[in-house]
Length: 450
Image 1 (cartoon, rainbow, N blue to C red):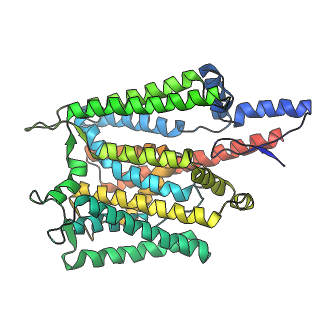
Image 2 (tube, rainbow, N blue to C red; image 1 turned 120 degrees about the vertical axis):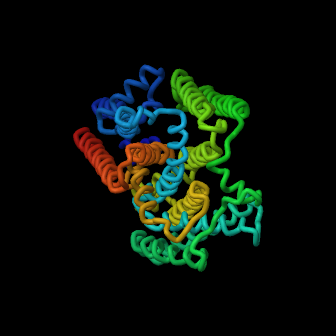
Image 3 (cartoon, one colour; image 1 turned 90 degrees about the vertical axis):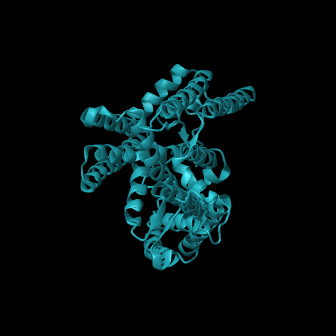
């Protein structure tokens, strides 16, 4: 039977003929199932369609947004002197969340396929270790070359995982569990008898560059100019793209929605830059946006475009939704799955480099297992489905912020690590429950319409 295409991650609607009753059913279904941006002609219609989708079980990012708001309110109230929302602590929260965010965006690629990568924690450690080793006095590689080498090494690891999973037909759980142990051992071999590597030298500029990913800051004036340029370029691109689609008679969001998105992006950017440009130093002035913030945003933008604006992204959603149907439609399922594991490991390498910058180096004491759990938890808490076919890069950002906020808030309260694990586990359980219930709601709604 023919289908009506929808946005990535949405179930297709059955096509109907000229039958009046079927047409009425399709119209009703469109309000509930088709994304509001497709059928809406105004911002008001979009909002009504969005409310209908939420009532139908597709809550989108609402649960994680409420979770983030609840965490912020609770920790603001209970933290000593209400410092949770102070500029100094919020910048620390950004820094602490960066690793969780990037790991979650990497894990999201395989979760979209209904798979899981249990090795991502130690793959990240391999990436950080390779980059840190290459900026030591010998061989003293340029920092950018060290980062590139780390990315290529981890991409190769992802290719190995993908090849074994797709060509040898082995379960991803088993392959990446083996990788968890294997790459931990490889990391220990790379670190050698010293058991660790440091990048805190103030004499070697390439070490300073890696360390400065988290601990170097953009000049406040440059940050404002950069924000203005980014919002201008992004806003112009969004406006021109949507306007072009309207002129061509193609489906496009209503004008009000386009304007609202541009205003939202500008507002979020202004808040972040304003917070970071407040002096956070006790003795010496510390102002400016940490370099890790634009780095994370670049990854977010790149993976958002890849998933939502490219053919490969559409194939990812198709394979995650129904691999057999995707295969019959002519999609190379093995290629998509292999590339997903490569992108997962590539992103993990970047997370490992950020983690190395946070710690000022890496040792064999790194807990890669905990990083794996946080990566999966952040992705799922953010809204990526464990069942495949639904998820976006921004879900990793939101989920990573929730994990980071919990970590940060409990640290301010002086509570031990076990409470962080307990609370994160409860939030993860709640997120999976919401995902399961929303899928049941959508499924029962579709059954009732049928």
